[in-house]
Image (cartoon, rainbow, N blue to C red; front, side, top):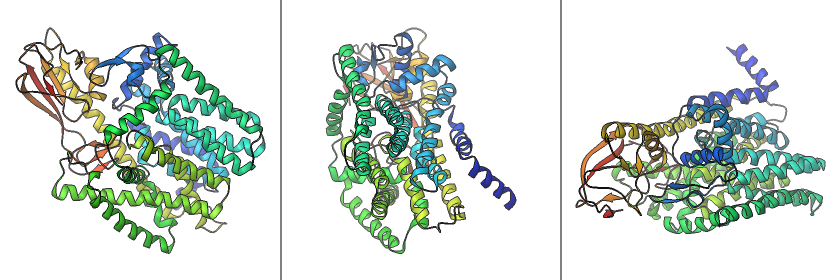
Length: 561
């Protein structure tokens, strides 16, 4: 056994890229058949449009917020991932395995890019890449066809080429980095944050502006061109409109800055849970006292700021206490991530530590105070920086002549992998439940003539649409007496009919994940947005429910939210 382990370790040390490729395939391969869910339909519909009209990605209408609007209004993302999905679908088809397989490439690019960047920042590049891979936020995000992982792939490689190019005054690499920044921004608007990040890093390294700054004109030109093109196509500059929407939506969510900061800490700790398993390996003695004090302070904050557990969340008694303790724990782990960053900056005080610190703190600040809601997708860009920070911290605690991983490292990575895989598996079950709910509902209640109307969106809307259901437009409802309308109860933008306009015929229940989930108001989990204080939660998860109504009147506008 020991001989085999030594052979595997030796092979991994001499073939790190192949090792990481195999690990990514093993970690994400089980999710290739995952149903589309959450915002996946928006990207897929835009990809269909791109295949027909490549120069006009958002030139169609969509019913996403319970009413028909132009796609340019409904979406809050640039079309980079949509073009990639259109290209992949043109080659491999539109099935779930085909598109998820295509999106494995950006996920692999993130991990390989983290490894290459870590080679310049520490002596444990393989450890940094593995710590990035085995985080819940990375595995869950890599199981979608949304823009987050694609943006991060361009982001990481932009940093790689910029760091390497700046060190060697290689303007070819710096120009390539500028192009990758533009691609990152055109995949997701957060990519524009690379501009101030790399400017700050460059000023620390070079102490003044130089010719390198000219390479940043490439993404600036791309941003201006995108604004001009979208304004010409849709009458509105989409990046500016998204910034305005973020402020508007954040006001609707309505949480204080203190609450938002606590939420961001909980999401940081949970999404980057690998940190919890590595803390015993990188702690110094006084860190244990910090952890104990953090638990006390976080507990006091959670119980004092009761808005973290929304009044609408049906939690009481032991279930509520269990969710509170999970929240406290992940708040402390999230705080440890920030402390880890500060400790690295204090120890090194160089350009690389400044790069990692600003990378992590900037992402945290955006997730906590700028984005419309705290969610796992906003935490994702922190993953490579945290992986590198953990590798640097562990390296500090080891003798310089020893490069081999200790049993403690293997145990920490193993536990992180088990938790992350479990969270990703539960997220796949959430998606499967949405698809199964649509299929069972349509099979039982679709009429032989006419339409089966439905509310709700995400995966339920996508699969109901494929089956032939009709999304109800709340601004111009077309329901008539005797028609059926179905509504998933654990969804968004749903409006319950008043008793005088519709009879409740049945409630279809479809079991999903039972003890761990990424999405359930009932246990306080909301990876993709904030219905609760946790990106994922352990607890007794109720089944998905779809209410079935028969209409009694030709005046279907009598709905209540």
